[in-house]
Length: 187
Image 1 (cartoon, one colour):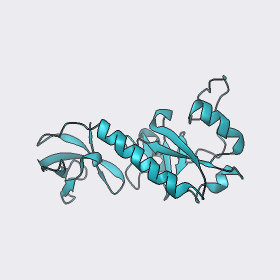
Image 2 (cartoon, one colour; image 1 turned 135 degrees about the vertical axis):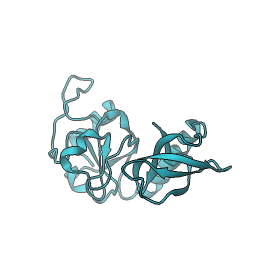
Image 3 (cartoon, rainbow, N blue to C red; image 1 turned 180 degrees about the horizontal axis):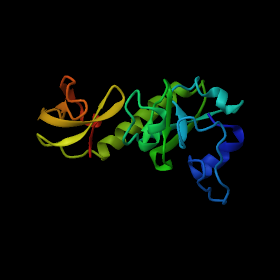
């Protein structure tokens, strides 16, 4: 959610990090603070962020690329060194405008239908951007519980999924089995 007066600027300029310029030369201002550093603050739950809209009729449903995401429990002072963070439940912070693609303006009445459409767009893009299967011993990022960690490929399966062992400092974690390709990223 955003304030109603911001909707047209977002449609024209996409989402911008505070301090960046819009096409008309105006600068994006910090409105609700920067408790976890400068960035674009987003909610994963439509109802959670509604009060930030101050009565606006809609919110933007976006696709997001998390990049290097801060692990759970990262100190607030260190969050700015990551591309994105989830410092509290239902909140995500993205450090650059390029990480977010607004797809739809939505509200409670249309949210579930538009989320399903966004999933279809996301699946289509994943298929178009499929990367070659990783090699045994390759170091990459693997998603676990919504966070991305360095891992080493132990084996790959015919369905494209891989088993991985975790890289430092998580090497004591149990190996992860059959991680699908969409949860694996090249470093």
